[in-house]
Length: 348
Image 1 (cartoon, rainbow, N blue to C red):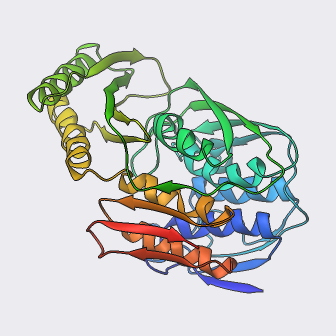
Image 2 (image 1 turned 90 degrees about the vertical axis):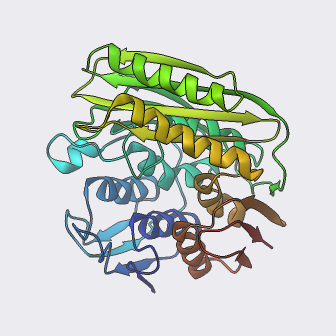
Image 3 (image 1 turned 120 degrees about the vertical axis):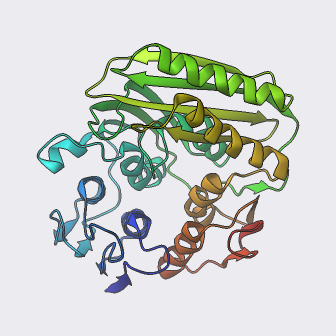
Protein backbone atom coordinates (compact mmCIF):
# COMPACT_ATOMS: atom_id res chain seq x y z
CA UNK A 1 0.00 0.00 0.00
CA UNK A 2 1.23 3.45 -0.92
CA UNK A 3 1.72 5.63 2.17
CA UNK A 4 1.58 9.41 1.69
CA UNK A 5 2.69 12.13 4.10
CA UNK A 6 -0.21 14.56 4.15
CA UNK A 7 1.97 17.28 5.66
CA UNK A 8 4.40 17.33 2.71
CA UNK A 9 5.12 20.73 1.11
CA UNK A 10 2.13 23.01 1.23
CA UNK A 11 0.52 20.35 3.40
CA UNK A 12 -3.10 21.23 2.69
CA UNK A 13 -6.08 19.44 1.27
CA UNK A 14 -4.62 19.30 -2.24
CA UNK A 15 -2.41 16.36 -1.21
CA UNK A 16 -5.53 14.43 -0.24
CA UNK A 17 -7.65 15.42 -3.25
CA UNK A 18 -5.01 14.55 -5.83
CA UNK A 19 -4.29 11.23 -4.11
CA UNK A 20 -8.00 10.40 -4.14
CA UNK A 21 -8.39 11.21 -7.84
CA UNK A 22 -5.33 9.16 -8.78
CA UNK A 23 -6.37 6.23 -6.61
CA UNK A 24 -9.75 6.13 -8.37
CA UNK A 25 -8.07 6.32 -11.79
CA UNK A 26 -5.28 3.82 -11.14
CA UNK A 27 -7.06 1.47 -8.74
CA UNK A 28 -4.14 1.81 -6.34
CA UNK A 29 -4.93 1.76 -2.64
CA UNK A 30 -3.22 4.24 -0.37
CA UNK A 31 -3.00 5.47 3.20
CA UNK A 32 -2.46 9.14 3.95
CA UNK A 33 -1.17 10.20 7.34
CA UNK A 34 -0.73 13.57 9.07
CA UNK A 35 -3.56 15.07 7.01
CA UNK A 36 -3.29 18.88 7.08
CA UNK A 37 -1.00 18.54 10.10
CA UNK A 38 0.24 22.13 9.95
CA UNK A 39 -3.19 23.76 9.72
CA UNK A 40 -4.95 25.58 12.54
CA UNK A 41 -7.61 22.86 12.49
CA UNK A 42 -5.75 19.76 11.28
CA UNK A 43 -7.36 16.67 9.83
CA UNK A 44 -10.42 16.30 7.66
CA UNK A 45 -12.74 19.29 7.51
CA UNK A 46 -16.22 18.99 5.93
CA UNK A 47 -15.07 19.76 2.36
CA UNK A 48 -12.25 17.21 2.62
CA UNK A 49 -14.53 14.51 4.00
CA UNK A 50 -17.07 15.27 1.27
CA UNK A 51 -14.32 14.79 -1.31
CA UNK A 52 -13.30 11.48 0.30
CA UNK A 53 -16.85 10.15 0.19
CA UNK A 54 -17.38 11.44 -3.34
CA UNK A 55 -14.28 9.60 -4.55
CA UNK A 56 -15.36 6.47 -2.72
CA UNK A 57 -18.85 6.64 -4.23
CA UNK A 58 -17.63 6.75 -7.82
CA UNK A 59 -15.43 3.66 -7.45
CA UNK A 60 -17.01 1.69 -4.58
CA UNK A 61 -13.99 2.21 -2.32
CA UNK A 62 -13.51 0.84 1.19
CA UNK A 63 -12.60 3.52 3.72
CA UNK A 64 -10.97 3.66 7.12
CA UNK A 65 -10.67 6.93 9.05
CA UNK A 66 -13.38 8.80 7.14
CA UNK A 67 -14.61 11.08 9.89
CA UNK A 68 -14.32 14.76 10.71
CA UNK A 69 -10.99 15.64 12.30
CA UNK A 70 -9.30 12.41 11.25
CA UNK A 71 -5.60 12.84 10.40
CA UNK A 72 -5.21 9.42 8.78
CA UNK A 73 -7.24 7.77 6.02
CA UNK A 74 -7.07 4.47 4.16
CA UNK A 75 -8.63 4.35 0.70
CA UNK A 76 -9.05 1.03 -1.15
CA UNK A 77 -10.75 1.39 -4.56
CA UNK A 78 -13.42 -1.19 -5.35
CA UNK A 79 -13.16 -0.90 -9.13
CA UNK A 80 -12.86 1.60 -11.98
CA UNK A 81 -14.79 4.89 -11.88
CA UNK A 82 -18.51 4.40 -12.46
CA UNK A 83 -20.36 7.08 -14.42
CA UNK A 84 -23.79 7.98 -13.13
CA UNK A 85 -25.89 10.49 -11.24
CA UNK A 86 -24.51 11.65 -7.90
CA UNK A 87 -25.32 14.21 -5.20
CA UNK A 88 -22.60 15.42 -2.82
CA UNK A 89 -23.54 17.82 -0.01
CA UNK A 90 -20.79 19.36 2.10
CA UNK A 91 -23.30 20.60 4.67
CA UNK A 92 -24.70 17.10 5.09
CA UNK A 93 -21.21 15.80 5.83
CA UNK A 94 -20.71 18.58 8.36
CA UNK A 95 -24.08 17.80 9.98
CA UNK A 96 -24.77 21.55 9.88
CA UNK A 97 -24.53 24.49 7.51
CA UNK A 98 -21.12 24.63 5.82
CA UNK A 99 -19.42 26.75 3.19
CA UNK A 100 -16.96 23.99 2.40
CA UNK A 101 -16.02 24.38 -1.25
CA UNK A 102 -18.00 22.43 -3.85
CA UNK A 103 -15.27 23.33 -6.35
CA UNK A 104 -12.76 21.25 -4.40
CA UNK A 105 -15.16 18.29 -4.32
CA UNK A 106 -15.60 18.60 -8.08
CA UNK A 107 -11.83 18.80 -8.50
CA UNK A 108 -11.57 15.35 -6.90
CA UNK A 109 -14.03 13.45 -9.12
CA UNK A 110 -14.02 15.43 -12.38
CA UNK A 111 -11.17 13.66 -14.15
CA UNK A 112 -12.11 10.12 -13.03
CA UNK A 113 -15.62 10.66 -14.38
CA UNK A 114 -14.44 12.52 -17.48
CA UNK A 115 -12.25 9.53 -18.38
CA UNK A 116 -14.99 6.98 -17.66
CA UNK A 117 -16.92 5.24 -20.43
CA UNK A 118 -20.22 7.05 -19.86
CA UNK A 119 -21.79 10.36 -18.91
CA UNK A 120 -22.35 11.67 -15.39
CA UNK A 121 -24.54 14.26 -13.70
CA UNK A 122 -23.46 15.80 -10.40
CA UNK A 123 -25.39 17.93 -7.92
CA UNK A 124 -23.03 19.69 -5.50
CA UNK A 125 -24.15 21.68 -2.46
CA UNK A 126 -22.05 23.88 -0.19
CA UNK A 127 -19.85 26.92 -0.77
CA UNK A 128 -19.57 28.06 -4.38
CA UNK A 129 -17.48 31.20 -3.80
CA UNK A 130 -15.23 30.94 -0.76
CA UNK A 131 -11.63 32.01 0.02
CA UNK A 132 -8.75 29.56 -0.47
CA UNK A 133 -10.61 27.53 -3.10
CA UNK A 134 -11.38 27.95 -6.81
CA UNK A 135 -14.70 29.81 -7.19
CA UNK A 136 -17.24 28.06 -9.36
CA UNK A 137 -17.05 31.07 -11.71
CA UNK A 138 -13.31 30.46 -12.18
CA UNK A 139 -13.86 26.79 -12.95
CA UNK A 140 -16.55 27.70 -15.46
CA UNK A 141 -14.71 30.46 -17.31
CA UNK A 142 -11.00 29.56 -16.95
CA UNK A 143 -10.31 25.96 -15.99
CA UNK A 144 -12.96 24.04 -17.93
CA UNK A 145 -12.40 25.88 -21.26
CA UNK A 146 -8.67 25.08 -20.95
CA UNK A 147 -9.06 21.36 -20.22
CA UNK A 148 -11.73 21.11 -22.93
CA UNK A 149 -8.80 21.44 -25.35
CA UNK A 150 -7.44 18.25 -23.78
CA UNK A 151 -10.71 16.36 -24.15
CA UNK A 152 -12.36 17.02 -20.77
CA UNK A 153 -15.94 18.03 -21.49
CA UNK A 154 -18.04 19.31 -18.61
CA UNK A 155 -20.62 22.05 -18.14
CA UNK A 156 -21.38 23.84 -14.88
CA UNK A 157 -24.66 25.51 -14.02
CA UNK A 158 -24.53 27.78 -10.98
CA UNK A 159 -28.00 27.39 -9.47
CA UNK A 160 -27.49 29.19 -6.14
CA UNK A 161 -24.54 31.24 -4.92
CA UNK A 162 -23.05 30.22 -1.57
CA UNK A 163 -20.57 32.50 0.21
CA UNK A 164 -18.56 31.82 3.37
CA UNK A 165 -19.55 31.14 6.13
CA UNK A 166 -23.17 30.08 5.51
CA UNK A 167 -22.73 28.24 2.22
CA UNK A 168 -26.06 27.10 0.85
CA UNK A 169 -24.88 27.14 -2.76
CA UNK A 170 -25.79 24.63 -5.44
CA UNK A 171 -24.29 23.69 -8.80
CA UNK A 172 -25.20 21.13 -11.45
CA UNK A 173 -22.38 19.58 -13.47
CA UNK A 174 -22.80 17.55 -16.65
CA UNK A 175 -19.72 15.47 -17.52
CA UNK A 176 -19.30 13.72 -20.86
CA UNK A 177 -17.29 10.53 -20.34
CA UNK A 178 -14.40 10.24 -22.75
CA UNK A 179 -13.52 6.57 -22.36
CA UNK A 180 -9.96 7.25 -23.54
CA UNK A 181 -6.80 9.21 -22.76
CA UNK A 182 -6.52 12.99 -22.80
CA UNK A 183 -4.73 15.05 -25.41
CA UNK A 184 -1.53 16.89 -24.42
CA UNK A 185 -1.50 20.65 -23.90
CA UNK A 186 1.16 23.19 -24.87
CA UNK A 187 0.50 26.63 -23.40
CA UNK A 188 3.52 28.85 -23.98
CA UNK A 189 1.67 31.92 -25.31
CA UNK A 190 -1.69 33.43 -24.48
CA UNK A 191 -2.61 35.36 -27.61
CA UNK A 192 -4.09 38.84 -27.87
CA UNK A 193 -6.41 40.20 -25.19
CA UNK A 194 -10.04 39.79 -26.26
CA UNK A 195 -11.96 41.25 -23.33
CA UNK A 196 -11.92 41.98 -19.60
CA UNK A 197 -15.10 41.47 -17.62
CA UNK A 198 -16.40 40.42 -14.24
CA UNK A 199 -19.13 40.18 -11.65
CA UNK A 200 -19.45 41.98 -8.32
CA UNK A 201 -21.91 39.91 -6.33
CA UNK A 202 -23.45 39.93 -2.87
CA UNK A 203 -26.03 37.85 -1.05
CA UNK A 204 -28.31 39.33 1.61
CA UNK A 205 -26.52 42.69 1.59
CA UNK A 206 -27.54 46.19 0.39
CA UNK A 207 -27.47 46.90 -3.36
CA UNK A 208 -24.96 49.73 -3.02
CA UNK A 209 -22.17 47.26 -2.10
CA UNK A 210 -21.95 45.41 -5.44
CA UNK A 211 -22.47 48.71 -7.24
CA UNK A 212 -19.51 50.25 -5.43
CA UNK A 213 -17.30 47.22 -6.12
CA UNK A 214 -18.23 47.22 -9.80
CA UNK A 215 -17.73 50.96 -10.20
CA UNK A 216 -14.32 50.94 -8.51
CA UNK A 217 -13.15 47.95 -10.55
CA UNK A 218 -14.29 49.64 -13.77
CA UNK A 219 -12.40 52.81 -12.87
CA UNK A 220 -9.17 51.07 -11.83
CA UNK A 221 -9.13 48.98 -14.99
CA UNK A 222 -9.98 52.05 -17.13
CA UNK A 223 -6.99 53.87 -15.66
CA UNK A 224 -4.87 50.92 -16.81
CA UNK A 225 -6.28 51.18 -20.32
CA UNK A 226 -8.98 48.49 -20.25
CA UNK A 227 -12.64 48.87 -21.09
CA UNK A 228 -14.03 46.34 -18.63
CA UNK A 229 -17.65 45.36 -18.16
CA UNK A 230 -18.23 44.55 -14.46
CA UNK A 231 -21.80 43.64 -13.58
CA UNK A 232 -23.15 44.32 -10.07
CA UNK A 233 -25.45 41.57 -8.80
CA UNK A 234 -27.53 41.40 -5.62
CA UNK A 235 -28.70 37.87 -4.85
CA UNK A 236 -30.49 35.99 -2.11
CA UNK A 237 -28.61 33.30 -0.21
CA UNK A 238 -28.25 31.36 3.01
CA UNK A 239 -26.31 34.22 4.60
CA UNK A 240 -24.52 37.48 3.85
CA UNK A 241 -21.51 37.44 1.54
CA UNK A 242 -19.69 39.59 -1.01
CA UNK A 243 -17.04 39.14 -3.65
CA UNK A 244 -15.77 40.32 -7.01
CA UNK A 245 -14.65 37.98 -9.77
CA UNK A 246 -12.65 39.34 -12.71
CA UNK A 247 -11.59 37.65 -15.93
CA UNK A 248 -9.24 38.43 -18.79
CA UNK A 249 -9.85 36.45 -21.96
CA UNK A 250 -6.98 36.08 -24.43
CA UNK A 251 -6.84 34.34 -27.77
CA UNK A 252 -5.61 31.02 -26.36
CA UNK A 253 -6.44 31.06 -22.64
CA UNK A 254 -8.29 32.97 -19.92
CA UNK A 255 -7.20 34.14 -16.48
CA UNK A 256 -9.24 34.96 -13.40
CA UNK A 257 -8.97 36.37 -9.91
CA UNK A 258 -11.23 36.97 -6.95
CA UNK A 259 -11.44 39.05 -3.80
CA UNK A 260 -13.94 38.70 -0.97
CA UNK A 261 -15.59 41.20 1.29
CA UNK A 262 -15.15 41.05 5.03
CA UNK A 263 -16.39 43.10 7.93
CA UNK A 264 -14.67 46.48 8.08
CA UNK A 265 -13.17 46.24 4.58
CA UNK A 266 -14.58 48.88 2.20
CA UNK A 267 -16.19 47.58 -0.99
CA UNK A 268 -13.81 49.75 -3.02
CA UNK A 269 -10.78 48.07 -1.47
CA UNK A 270 -12.15 44.62 -2.28
CA UNK A 271 -12.36 45.66 -5.93
CA UNK A 272 -8.86 47.11 -5.88
CA UNK A 273 -7.36 43.85 -4.58
CA UNK A 274 -8.88 41.88 -7.45
CA UNK A 275 -7.83 44.49 -10.02
CA UNK A 276 -4.24 44.54 -8.77
CA UNK A 277 -3.98 40.76 -9.18
CA UNK A 278 -5.50 40.79 -12.66
CA UNK A 279 -3.17 43.58 -13.78
CA UNK A 280 -0.16 41.73 -12.37
CA UNK A 281 -1.10 38.75 -14.48
CA UNK A 282 -1.64 40.81 -17.61
CA UNK A 283 1.69 42.62 -17.32
CA UNK A 284 3.55 39.31 -16.86
CA UNK A 285 2.73 38.16 -20.42
CA UNK A 286 2.50 34.57 -19.05
CA UNK A 287 -0.34 32.45 -20.42
CA UNK A 288 -1.37 30.73 -17.17
CA UNK A 289 -2.15 32.40 -13.87
CA UNK A 290 -0.79 30.53 -10.82
CA UNK A 291 -4.14 28.89 -10.06
CA UNK A 292 -4.55 27.50 -13.57
CA UNK A 293 -1.00 26.13 -13.65
CA UNK A 294 -1.66 24.28 -10.40
CA UNK A 295 -4.97 22.86 -11.61
CA UNK A 296 -3.41 21.64 -14.87
CA UNK A 297 -0.90 19.34 -13.16
CA UNK A 298 -3.23 16.35 -12.97
CA UNK A 299 -4.80 16.53 -16.47
CA UNK A 300 -1.34 17.06 -18.00
CA UNK A 301 0.01 14.03 -16.14
CA UNK A 302 -2.91 11.93 -17.43
CA UNK A 303 -2.56 13.07 -21.05
CA UNK A 304 -0.65 11.14 -23.67
CA UNK A 305 2.56 12.74 -24.90
CA UNK A 306 4.36 15.89 -23.81
CA UNK A 307 2.58 18.84 -22.19
CA UNK A 308 3.94 22.20 -21.08
CA UNK A 309 2.54 25.37 -19.53
CA UNK A 310 4.20 28.60 -18.43
CA UNK A 311 3.11 30.72 -15.46
CA UNK A 312 4.24 33.95 -13.84
CA UNK A 313 4.39 32.49 -10.34
CA UNK A 314 5.56 29.09 -9.14
CA UNK A 315 3.53 28.41 -6.00
CA UNK A 316 4.15 25.98 -3.17
CA UNK A 317 0.78 24.53 -4.08
CA UNK A 318 2.10 23.73 -7.57
CA UNK A 319 5.23 22.03 -6.24
CA UNK A 320 3.24 19.97 -3.75
CA UNK A 321 0.72 18.94 -6.39
CA UNK A 322 3.55 17.79 -8.64
CA UNK A 323 5.04 15.68 -5.85
CA UNK A 324 1.76 13.85 -5.20
CA UNK A 325 1.37 12.97 -8.88
CA UNK A 326 4.88 11.53 -8.89
CA UNK A 327 3.92 9.14 -6.08
CA UNK A 328 1.29 7.49 -8.28
CA UNK A 329 2.41 7.84 -11.89
CA UNK A 330 5.61 6.99 -13.73
CA UNK A 331 5.66 10.33 -15.54
CA UNK A 332 8.46 12.85 -15.75
CA UNK A 333 6.74 15.84 -14.12
CA UNK A 334 8.98 18.86 -13.59
CA UNK A 335 8.72 22.50 -12.57
CA UNK A 336 11.46 24.83 -13.77
CA UNK A 337 11.76 28.14 -11.95
CA UNK A 338 12.17 29.46 -8.43
CA UNK A 339 9.37 29.52 -5.85
CA UNK A 340 7.49 32.80 -6.19
CA UNK A 341 8.91 33.60 -9.62
CA UNK A 342 8.05 32.68 -13.21
CA UNK A 343 8.31 29.06 -14.21
CA UNK A 344 7.30 26.25 -16.54
CA UNK A 345 5.47 23.05 -15.72
CA UNK A 346 6.25 20.19 -18.09
CA UNK A 347 5.21 16.55 -18.33
CA UNK A 348 7.03 14.12 -20.60
